[in-house]
Structures are given as structure tokens and as C-alpha cells.
Image (tube, rainbow, N blue to C red):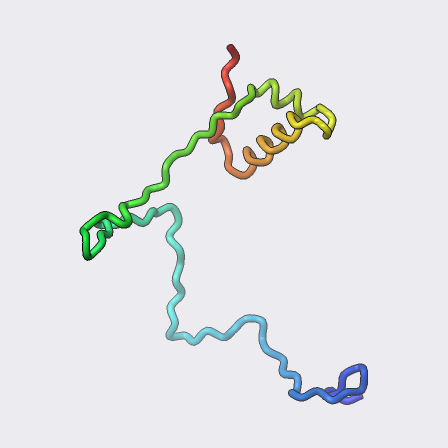
Length: 111
């Protein structure tokens, strides 16, 4: 079987061309490296030309803290409940989000 025929015996319309997996970068192109940890800040707010109202202010990320509706002991107990209970699913969601987001949760205080 020739290279221009498929396994069904049909001839291909275009010849197969093997391409490299990584493109060649010419030497005159400089490498750009990302600067980790720096935040982008706007020198002044962006305003509307016609009315002068602020469209985009300097948006710095806010530290969000999520207050959970149950205590830490209740979460640990709920993780061992049967799957049919909704409290188990709330505890699983809290466990998953704590792995994704990190320690930005505050558990409900005992009364």
C-alpha cells in the first residue's frame, strides 16, 4: 500500500506532511518571561468620554472570607453520614472548596 492511500484503498486528496511538534523560534525573537507576584494597577481610573463617569476603577483583588453555616465538628461528623443526607453533600462541598481555595473559610461559632 502506498503512502497516499488509506486503509480502505481510497487515495488521499492531499499528501501527508509531518510537522514538528515545537515550532522553530528565530534567534532574533527574545524570550518573554512572566513576572510572578506583581499586580497590575491602573495609574488613574478609566472614565467615560461623554459624561466623565468612572467606568473602571483600579480593581485590586479583595480578600474574601467565606463564613460557613456549620461548625468544624459538624463538618467532620457529616463526612461520615450516608450519601442520602444533604448535610453530607454540604460537607463534601466544603471539603472540595477548601482544597481549591485554601484557608479562606471561617466556621460558624458554637453558641
